[in-house]
Image 1 (spheres, rainbow, N blue to C red):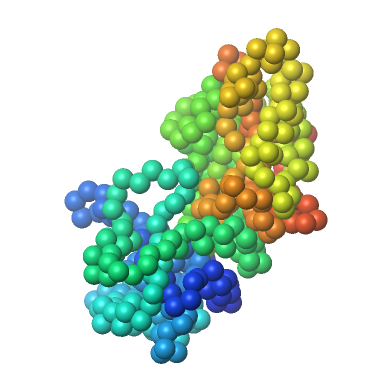
Image 2: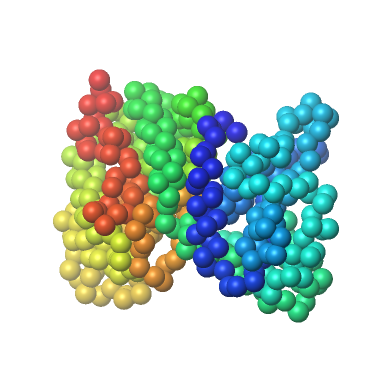
Length: 429
């Protein structure tokens, strides 16, 4: 853990919000993520389950959170079960949380070792009528591995088949979409680290550098500012590579006259940031590159005026399509015949702008939230329109992160250059 300790008020208030959605006489159980193997005795770095972190602040493997607000025993309304630390673990891995530290982190007074869980949990489940279990219900999730949560769910349903089972994730999608002020501050810190990475590469890029060298400059700046690293696999695509939406090879040389699309963001305290900027390798946009860039920037700025509480994302995307269509006409990439003959299920503009414009962001870069209800106040969204012209080897995408308030969308990346003149001046300073 490189980040500074988070105020436990965040987790106390998150649990309070969660409890309000529970049915009477319920128990909710959340498990940490597994540590996944690589090869031989290797393992991937541990990344905490976001719901466990959101509700407890505990950033440690083999941890379990139990919420039983109507429990007869007042000490068992909130419980943490943790892997017991030892001198041996301290030597080989570093000491784990002790009970006092776990309480200071989470605000939960009752902490047991994981070895005590079956004994403590059994009477709580018998006492309850409803059992809330968690699962990954992200719309884009592709689940191929059985998780610690999956294994517990299977075991729990076998042992207690007559209870009523409920979905904790449905509640988590609601409460995680609305960011607490402390969460907003953590996201701001992630965005500020991203700004430092961007400042660094603007002075580094020149003809002949390699995409992976740019990636290395960014990660250097991230880690030295207490970030664990990238919030997602970075995209550093020059020339035609910029037209590959999820290009992550980052292994080509950057040529004079090309534009580099850089999509990256720092993670801080498990919270993501998500930035995309496009810069000319030689420090100067051509006239055509500038025209396409400014077209995307105009769409981006209009989107920022449209995103507000109460908007349906599906309706917003339709309006974005109309704006993009007009820009593509102005760039002579589409004509009125293309639009007249378009497939309503795949409008003409999607030839050059084929992805969505905005997504929730938070503990996940593509964060959970409801897509069938209006955008809630204090949610955080990206705005990332793009135009990709393969025949010109030119891809332009511009992305910032926004806090959605009743007073408008607040740009959390306001201090990262985005105008053509700002980019060129920074590169040629």
